Figure: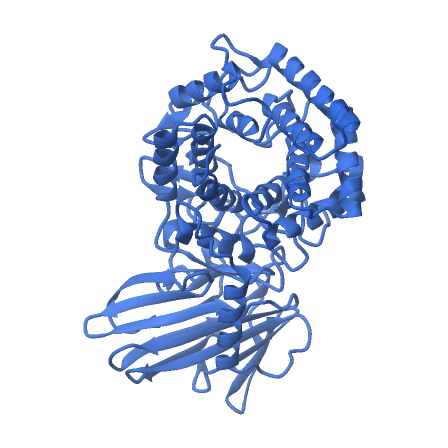
Length: 579
């Protein structure tokens, strides 16, 4: 039995992200934290009603209300806001930041802004995706302690809560007008330290976020740029690994079998984030990306995977949880990319390392990683691989062009002799890709055997693979606009014999890529139009999933999708400059 009767799932655009770098949760409009894995991203969930599991932690008004909310600027401190028939109440929500890797601390502060307000609070933590209930419940000096699975629980601020017949802690309280009430929930797999002071934790968390997030004032959308950086920061561990999304099993299309676990670090996505953090000046996310990817390249070499756990180990094989799943979805744990090779990732790594070199941020280990990447391209460039969209192995043209861009970028940071070798290698790849993968319109097609263009093919020229005025670059942008655009949104490629939107949603990543492609070719109006259209595809929390259902105006897929926020962050900076 799930908790859907009390807290049914919401549309994705209504969920806010609470994250501290080591783990993350989604909070819904009823004050229901519907998703939280602990102690780390890839561990099992203790709150999983998002996918039909049992367990809940909710703080919501008793009276009828309407919902809204907002993030405090430059932070992942979320404020649920409810207007009842006679008053206004907010709940300030956050995971403490910076984080303890082995202990999650959830802060919730009810603020009665005008009059007294009655609130209902419920806590029911269940490890193993709802499979293990709370046990050893104990109240001592106003503090609740318990266990679930191998996790220790401590909850302060709820001295008057009482367990119901299902083992949930239930509390109703009245918060007097113009006052607040704090709850602090701790979860860890090791003995818990002394209980934290709520006021001190709020001050420290707010200060740490403000120190961590740049202003991005010299962009076309400073608020959105800051928020994108905040989201990426919240998805990145202290060890540098950035998860692709906080969730698993959220459907890209109902009953289409397209459900994935994105709680792992994709090297390509990490490159996108690092590049976005390097446009004007080097921000810490650049160093995180360089450090994490360098370690993987040196450790795995020829066996480099597309993605890893944030601790650097491979993702597990895919399994399906015995849960209903988010409506239309399938709760899959693990990821099939643990058996793939994606050549484009190696080209993206070289682009990242070239950006680091421009800012004098390379280490000796990264210099070795650069050499390994060049060797890997040399070994694998003419062999089929899975490509950017993780499909069946083929000779994907985008992968080769990404490598061309990477080789050219790193050549600019090398001695003339070494640069000539790298540029010659890039020219060879470009010539062979042109021989095999140009269609009758003069545009890049997906592979020698797969016709039609791909929106991802617009990105390598922006990165330096080809000039903006190269006929292949121009023709590909025209082909993407003709074949893959709908109402200002962009699909990654056209499915066989199906109209756009029937097989999958528009890819928001591709929308920002189109904006960058127009910027690269000097089309300012078109670049801004595409940027504005795609940045509007979010709900009140300003989060983006992977896909957007154009017809229904709904987000699809896991949330929040890191690479979409990375490309938004890059685009806000690029469009403020000349190409």
